[in-house]
View (cartoon, rainbow, N blue to C red):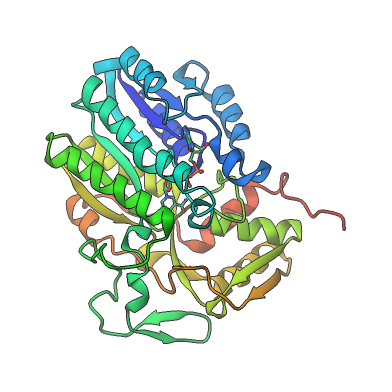
Length: 358
Ligand SMILES: NC(=O)c1ccc[n+]([C@@H]2O[C@H](COP(=O)([O-])OP(=O)(O)OC[C@H]3O[C@@H](n4cnc5c(N)ncnc54)[C@H](O)[C@@H]3O)[C@@H](O)[C@H]2O)c1
């Protein structure tokens, strides 16, 4: 038996991981306690996604409603599958900077201590398994905001000829910057994942995600920018747009492309690796540009409430360099750009996200 163990298995990346590794022929064991509904309310619940997984995959998927903060319950799951575990994909987390400030203990316990719990279980019960961790570009704090930018009509851009013109590389400092409470709990996890690679020789990788997105996002205001933007346009909800004249730039990568990257690492794992993971130059957008695309796709005009004050520590321009990952895994390619991502989000949710009567 070959098992893929996925934490956060009903979430955006987790549910894609479950399907992806099930298609590869592995048995998939998922851990998720729908804590996203605690973070973001009913909009954020991933219960619908779990129902789909269990009905579509039947015996190929086994679910455990376990909290990754619960060491005893977590280790029982790992113990049960032991050396059959061929890969661990750790996606469970508290994903929003704004939310983290409401409950710093909860954020740190889930993101930092929870990651340590999953790492330690892997070391004890399946030390040979590649360990794939979902980190974030927020580990760089607000340092990207010190880059020299130029203001264009619909977006900010980095100065032409700058070394990061093709994207920010992994050697940007994670030190001496404002991270948000969330950014710090993710830094702790990111470094611990590296350390389990360096210190214990495990095959670990931490992937510093840009905007990871796709139709399976349980879109909520505080997390899931492209899906939430499309949801607002489709439902006729007002979107609160914070600062930078809506010209801030994000690179977006579809969950499918995230999973093909994870599969590449699974097939040829390395130790203590760090990779940036985003849409890069191939797939990026400003908020204003995304609204225009959403209008073209849906035929509906967005309702925008512009708030002058930017979110604390929010990136003004962030595009990931994928050069290091592509050098290590040259056959991996990205298949979705922002228009394709938005179109798919629209089509997948056409029945669910309908205009609300006011
Ligand atoms: N989506 C993005 O734009 C993005 C960007 C960078 C990094 N990341 C990181 O990638 C990971 C996955 O992101 P996502 O968008 O799939 O998030 P998500 O919220 O859709 O999925 C996470 C899942 O983990 C579950 N979970 C949360 N706390 C848990 C706990 N204590 N025990 C068990 N399950 C728990 C949630 O219920 C949810 O289903 C997160 O760690 C996030 O920080 C995401």
